[in-house]
Image (cartoon, rainbow, N blue to C red; front, side, top):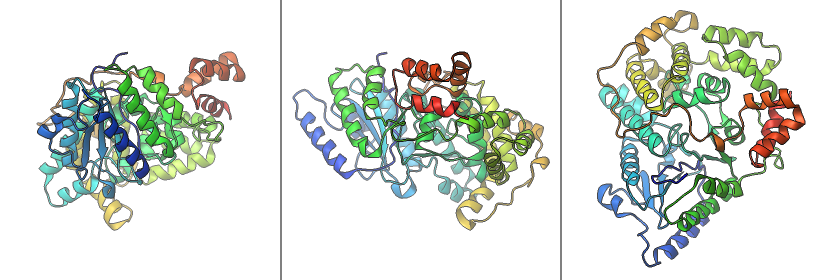
Amino acid sequence: MTIKSPQIGAHIRTSNDKIATRRLLALKNRLSETPGRIPTTSKVYDSKLNKTDDNAEAVIRQHPSGLSKIRLNRPTKLNAISFNMCDIISQAVLAWENLETSKAILITSEGRQAFCAGGDIRALMDLEQQDRHEECIALFQKHSRLTHTVGSIMGGGVGLTISAPFRVATENTIHAMPETMIGHFPDASASFWMPRLDGFLGLYLMLTGRRLRGPDVYYSGIATHYVQSKDLAELEVALEELASKTNGVLELHDINAVIDRFSVDMEEKELPFSLGGNIWQAINRCFQHNTIENIVAALKEENVAVSWAKETNDLLSKMSPTSLKLSLQLYYAGANLCFVDCMRLEYQLTNLTLASKEFAEGTRAALITKTAPNWNPPTLEQVDANEIKKRFFDTPISNPLQTLHEGGNFIEYPHTPFILPRCSEILDVANRMGHDEAVKYFMDKYNEKKGVKTKVVSVLNK
């Protein structure tokens, strides 16, 4: 596959390396001195954005190789997406789409604490407390447009990365969607991606806000590769060198091969899939139901993964009952929608949920008082699922989301060959072939991709 527009996606970066920065600068200087090369910073951004200085909230650069770069630069705010960042990144990606010298996009971030904490929830809360509802909606609109723009052009979601063909997790990576804990719902295209994870894993993550660490982010299919953070700088240089050698043509399998060179041997490092085996099967048993009440009942009746079921039920008991029922309906709605329609639905729900004050109560309790929130209604039994559907899903808003870019009509994720095999496929093959034969089958099918054997064994190991 030849990439003519910036579609190779994102590298999940969770740490910064000063030595690597110096190494990259040296490489940039060498390449920029070569006759006929484009300048290190594309003039497109000097003239259109004027946001390329190193202190900008999103630093936009284009390497002489043609590798375009976005660096999230709000480390003290966990790189949460602001109004300004939405504008900078959206304009950059739209400009890069038609720029001949832009072959690929690499997204990184500044700081060691977080790649991206999502939308700036504190800023939203401050606006709502000041009754600046329209500005609050405007920020959600910008964030939704950004997610659609990045997702339909080169990959975005869960921050800015999940649509990308390549997503690199490290030992420092943490993935979570805790929105039901603050009276909201998983957004930023979660309604598209979570129903498309294996089995009911996506619904489990949406409702519970369960944190996944690096290895499980990889095994679950949210990341395509697992690399140690100390190797990220060298990986970045290797991608620049690949872009320099291709003369304007990048093949996905070549990019994949470069990242594979830096990938961790999961078996050698003894990094199993913590949600495999009995836990995986318990997730599917308990979360296959289409009501929250039935999910809770199944968790209480779970007699195999007992401690997991109790922990999960405890998590659900802390969430907004309204958010749980809304998120459940969103999961099933998103399973049948294309990417852009998922974004439009999420934006509609956001407009309507902000007016319910559940979000204000959840953020107040989580960020200010650090106390248990007072949900309204306070119990699942008091939340009518039919009323949720009528109030939020069947009520169109007067200002639907207007996207900045055409596209995003895909209904299935187009880059599944780069993620590990799905648990359901592993179980199906093992039932037909046997345990050992299944391991060999998947090792051959995935060309001995690192992590394949460990995931297969973890899924089959009860």
